[in-house]
Length: 115
Image (cartoon, rainbow, N blue to C red):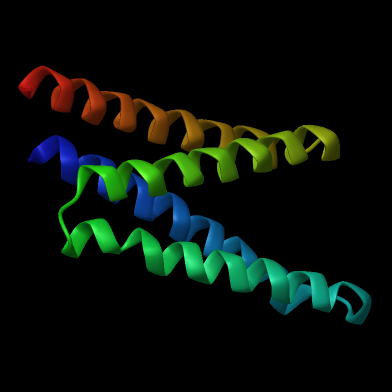
């Protein structure tokens, strides 16, 4: 059970970190970028809300699906950080993605071993 909640918390933290950056980008956007930032904020809000599901509805399958999505989001954010040549925007998402991947592998391994 600890492994499940560890993965759920890491996944939710990843989603809410992404939401925080989207809120910041939206607030600081110039008029020309405002529309794109609204779309990013919309998606980040949805992911953050969905990431809370596994904390209230216990399902390894649901948690795994959400974790995979957040791993991909953070990995792509790291790639964008590389393109921007910004260390913080590269290493932060990359480490979050790897942490989430580790938690998911830990959860998956423990679930498989229980069967």
